[in-house]
Length: 229
Picture 1 (cartoon, one colour):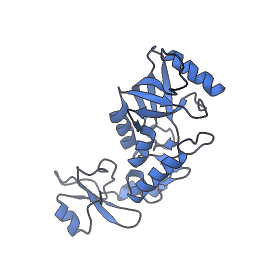
Picture 2 (cartoon, rainbow, N blue to C red):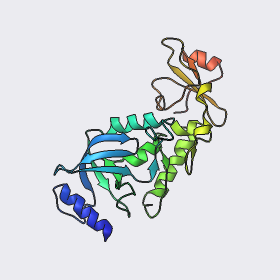
Picture 3 (cartoon, rainbow, N blue to C red):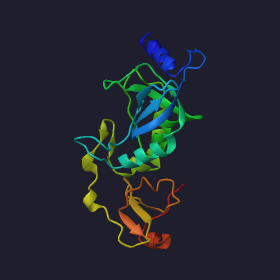
């Protein structure tokens, strides 16, 4: 009942009436707070802060944790994908979190954006019952991202069930780019595999460079291989 009241309230703010055959709420994204939090405007002009359900992206503004690896990449990806776009909000069981944010799945066209962040290696699955509608589906996508060592999964022991481990990465060990024009990133994954990513790579932006190379041949000579896909 509480959930239905909120849905009806949001639908009224959106300037439409409730339709049991259409459980989605239309809104426009007007601001990106971070990778998993956005602000939207209903057609009536009312604004709401939305926390994406069932996922957690690394922090960028946390007072204690600061900027975590891949936090900026997640925020940039969300901004590029959603800012200014019209989306559909789908709710689960809970209505709001303790901060007053509306909890929702965000659809853009036919893409479930919460899931897309997981697929890109920019978010981990974070299950907090009773909101579990897509939990199994998201976990399958996460397993694939982990297998491909995408984004957060490229750092050994970084992503965990309870968050992101700040001690799993030593930034002082990461090599800075010293040769102009040498843009190929070499990364060593959790299994010790050496993989290089050029700018056409799917995971180039998310990859943390432990070595920089000028050409694929140079990377391969150093023992790095191209990604599988």
